Image 1 (tube, rainbow, N blue to C red):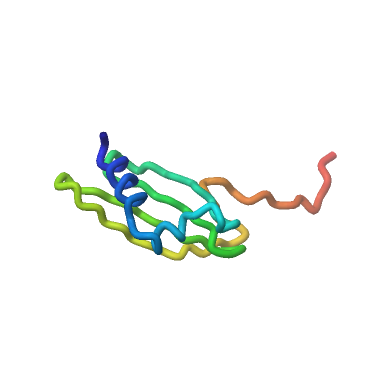
Image 2: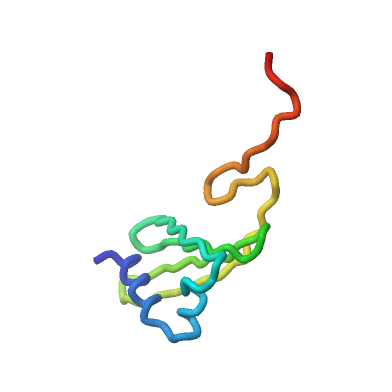
Length: 94
């Protein structure tokens, strides 16, 4: 088992308060995992229309898990989840 999977296993074993963040009752929950390498991965959760919470989980060789939480703001012309937001074309092509 890689360290990232161990970190995910640790996440699911956390307290009820932490599990509430990831519960299906939260309608805006988006589960997007991005594995950076064997020891680190990201989880994205929609926060509101133009921002999200980004959780970065990393595990070391001793099995200790560190979690960093960032609020990520999105702009119209920026990437979201690795995809550019569609833009309306004001001119028709001939």
